[in-house]
Image 1 (spheres, rainbow, N blue to C red):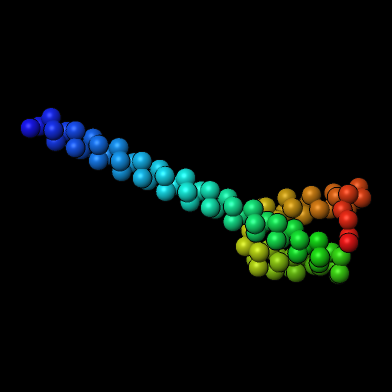
Image 2 (cartoon, rainbow, N blue to C red):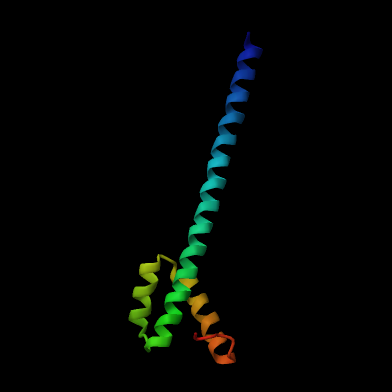
Length: 93
């Protein structure tokens, strides 16, 4: 009888850890997808702001907040866009 309880506990633990792991992977994938969508939105909004005005850092921070991305990710995008502007790889139309 003790052996059958051990089997039930072991199977329950394995099943429980499997469910938790599956949920963790699902949340991680969804977070990554939403982060990428928000990053693309910020890049589009930042380019539009640069084209139509000269945004101040405070105005750029407002765009960052509205797009719900981290400042570190926004800084990376700003660097990429500025590089593209300087070398002429960014089309404004």
